[in-house]
Every structure is written in C-alpha cells, then in structure tokens.
Length: 535
Image 1 (cartoon, rainbow, N blue to C red):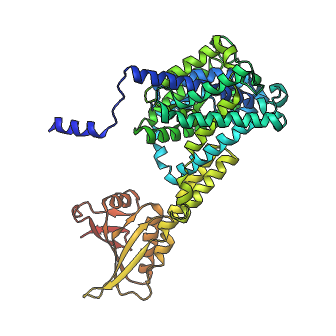
Image 2 (tube, one colour; image 1 turned 180 degrees about the vertical axis):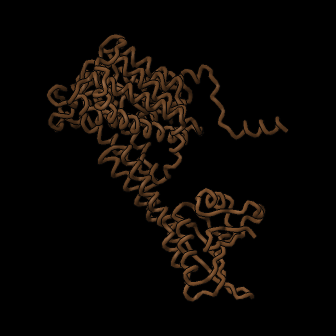
Image 3 (tube, helix red, strand yellow; image 1 turned 30 degrees about the vertical axis):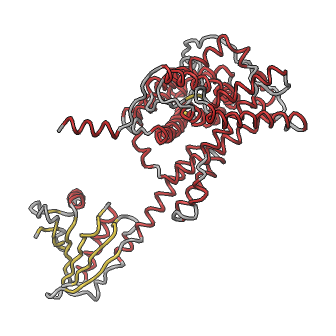
C-alpha cells in the first residue's frame, strides 16, 4: 500500500529535469541571456538610487547567486530592482550610501525572520484578480522603463537616470532604433520555429549585436550608460555609528524594503510556479532573500529581490534548474572583471527588443476579455491593481488589491445573512439562520428577529450558519437581552464545534461539555444567568 501511495504521488508531482548535455546547454545559454539583460537594468536602477553603477551590479551578482543556490523556486532570477531603488534614493540623498548598506543588512535580517516564522504562507491570501492586475501592471512598468532608451544619450551625472534625461530620438536615429528593436523581436519570435538549440532571446541579442558592430551603426550601446568594468566586491562593514539614532534612521527604510522585496519575490515565486508546475517554497524564498541581502549589504551592494522580467526570460528560454541562475551571476561577474569592453558594445535596441517580448509574454491578455464575464468587484480589482502598480509600486498595488478584495468579500457575506421562520406544534417560533454571522452581518442579524411580536419561546437554529467573531457573540447576547426584556425565552441550536469553542472562550457564556458531539449543539441561552446549557 505504501509503495502504491508513493507511486501515485510521484505521478502527480513534477519531476526534476534530467541533467544531461542538452539540459546543461539550455541552462547555461539561458543564464547567459539573463546576464546580458541584467546589465542595463542593474546600471539604471543604481542611477535611480543615486549610487555608483557597480553598487547595482554587485547586488545583481550576489543576490542572484545566493537566491539561485538556496531560493524557493529553481529558475527564478533576483537582483537589483526599481521598486527598491525608488525607496533607497531618499536615504542615500539624506544620509549617504553607507546608511544604505546598513539598511540593506537590516532588511535582510527582517526577511530571514519572516522566513523563520513562516510568514510567507500569507501570500496565499492574494486573490487571483490581484495576481492578474499585478502581472498586467508589471508588464506596463517594464514597457515604460524601456522608453528611456529612446532618448538621446546623456550623462548619468547630469540626469541621474542614465539615458533618460536627453531629448527623444527623431529622424533617422529613431527609425534605426525602432528597426533594430523590431529585428530583435522578429528573431525571438522565429527562432523557436527553427531550432531550440539556442534560447530565442540570446539569438535575438547576438544577431542584432553582430549587425550593429559589423556595420559600425551609430546607435546607443550599453557603454553609453556607464562603464561596467570593476573588480571583485570587497568585504566592507557599513561605516555607520552603532547607535540608537542610526537604528531610528535605517529601520523605517529597512521595513519598507523588506516588505516590498518579499511581496515581489513571493508573487514572482507563484508566477514562475504556474509556468514550471511547482508549488511551495515561500518560507524558503524569504530566508534566501534575507541571506542574500544581508551578504550584499556587507559587500557594497544595494540589495534586491526577485525580478519578474528576467525570471520570465529564464523560464521561457527553457531553464528549470538552479544552474541557470548560478550561471547568470557568474557571467555577470565575468562581465565586470574581464568582459566589459565587449559587453559595452551591445546595442541597447537588442535588449529593449528582448524586454518588449517579455512584456508581450507577461501581460495577461485574456484578462481583457474576461473583464465583462467576472464579477464586477473582481474586474474593478484587476484594473485598480494595474493602475496602482503603474502609478506607485507593486507592493502598494498588491496591498491595495488585497484590502479591496477583502472588503468586497466581507460586504458580500454581510448581505448573505438570512432567516426562514416556522411555528412548531408546541407554539415555538424557529428562526432557521443561514449565512455567516460576523462583524459585517451583525446588524443584519439583529433585524431578522421581532421580539415584540414573537411567542414566549423562540429558537435560533444555526445549522446553516457560523458564528465567526466577537461581534457575532455580542449580537447574540444583545438579541437575548431583547427577548429577556420582553419576558420571553431564546434557545440557540446547532452551533458548530468551532462556534462552541468560541462561545466557551468568550467568558461571559458557559457551555455544558456534555453536548452531543455528533449532532453538534442544541442549547438554551438563559438570559437571566448568561448560561448556555446543553440538551
């Protein structure tokens, strides 16, 4: 029997890919593609945060390597992200980069604690409409981020955002840029139809780069953003005073960074899981992100979290193991150490084309057709989360979406409280309650009864209802007091086991433990003594 059970489970669980030559080639080439796509984003996010480009690149290397090794989902890619960078910029501007490193270390410790206490499981409370809004908003954000590459190259020092501060391209330069982007996208689209030996994004980057370099085309290149040449990241404890004042400065930033990083990472974990057919790993991912950021903070990195764009590139290129993430980090480090002159020649148009294909693949296009078929509240949540993601950041959008979904759910359940009545042969009136009784429906519950006109004995039957919280208990007690004032008796019947325990813990009600456990509870509420007695 045990063998049969294990065999059945094995058939239902996704199998780990066999590591043969073909698999290894796919993982290495996917890692190379991801590394190439990481370079401009890491540099751009470093500019956003107001730090040196190497601070962003070191974060991409260290965070990417550690999360690839011990993260919760093989195939996920982590590194420096824009959502974290926009929070960091004010800290760096006011207190300097050393305080940023200290905040990143504290951020990592908070994330480790979240993993140890298994807080990652709460990501399951994110409804599907919020996930749709999340991926749609993120696709739009990725698209808008690429538009800065269509500006005339400017100095990072003058603009603070790399290429984002110049005038928009026009004329022949714009046509050339658009043509190269379109070429890259066409190669990515056609490659899988011809061969799967090489990942489609890598084929697009390679062909476009060869064309630009071979013909000496004058187009923006990676080197126009900043030089990526550097050495190994050095161990460096943040040079900040170990005082309460320092903690007061960095703690608010660390908490926000930790929350944003975990929300983005766990949502990306679920998204990658949908593609690869794997589940779980939330707590493991929290710990991995925490360890990665703690280490990054003491090696001069700006910290990071999961990157959905690069993760999509990775898994869509066929990567399914941890090898691709490790290879991506090692390639990126080799670019910094020895490959900078070559990597800086890659045209930005090729990388923009790759990211545009990521946008097309990430956006949930079916959500546009289901908006009219899903409940109105779900449609509102999808649009709201998408809009808030674009206007603010992903973490804020997800929190807003969860709150709105929870309020909508509470309101819908609040209107479900109902009661049908009947008169027994003995003359008692029975209220058959249906629907949940909780804070949202407590007022509606009290409106179901008519103590002034009811007979001397009234029965509230909860066989089709549930008592959920203290507000429900208070509503029951208030109703009992109304019948007491009218000189009548109220009986409570068929409360479920968990409601039984809830009433027992409430303190002001006493429960007879001899109630029939199979038939649940049939009880009388004595309004004079406050005792709920068994029958």
